Each structure stands twice: as C-alpha cells, then as structure tokens.
Length: 144
Image 1 (cartoon, one colour):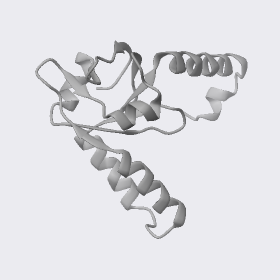
Image 2 (image 1 turned 45 degrees about the horizontal axis):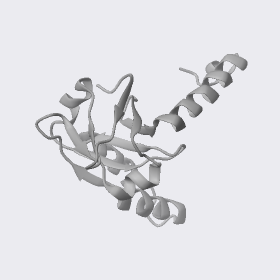
Image 3 (image 1 turned 120 degrees about the vertical axis):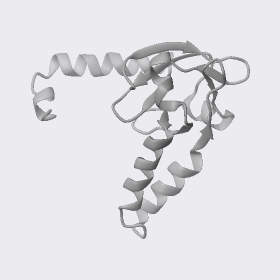
C-alpha cells in the first residue's frame, strides 16, 4: 500500500531506502519512470506498471499526442529491484530529470509512489495547501 510522506536520502550509488510499508507491493520488482505534472519520478509496482501500459494500449496508438507521450514516458522507464536492505537504484538519467541530489521525499498515491527533491516537494505542497485553504469549492469540484 502506497500511503504517506517519507523523507529519505540518496546514497553515493544512487540508491534509496524504500519505506517498509511500500516493500510488500514492490517485492516482485519496481519500475521507475519520469513523472509528470511536477518534476518528480513515478515508482510503480510491476502490477501497477502493467496497468499503466494497459491504459496506454487502450488509446488510439496512431494519435499523434498519444504516440509522443508513449515514447517519452516508456523510454524513460527502468526496471529495478529491491536489495536485501530494501533499497532500489535510481538510474542517473532519472536522477538528473527530477533534479534529485541528496534529500528526497517519497509520497504514496493510490496507484503509485512519487519521488521528489525535498525542496521541490515542500514548495509544491505549500502551493497546494494554500490553494485548498483559499478556495473552499476546490475540494467539492473534485467530486470525491
């Protein structure tokens, strides 16, 4: 189950400790890709990645934007695994894309986890917090 906000550091080999709560879902493998709607990375379980692939396959493959997105998103993906200590490696190209240096935050979302640079996450969170405090209709519009 992916839930919560977990602060971690990246070691000199580009590895991070995965929160213990997340490990059961990731024991069969991890897929890390570029994120969107913020400079972050997506961390999927193998099953979660398969669901994402199915969503992409269900779209019109010849549609220009879907083709562009599929190429951009899938080409960034990297299959990884957890080591004995519960760590996984983040490829250098993905570290660079998300601007990850040392201090990071791993967030749990319903279908995946996200990995953010700590400063970028704090800025994003503060903006979202202000938005939801300021606009009382914002949550109603989500129709949850």
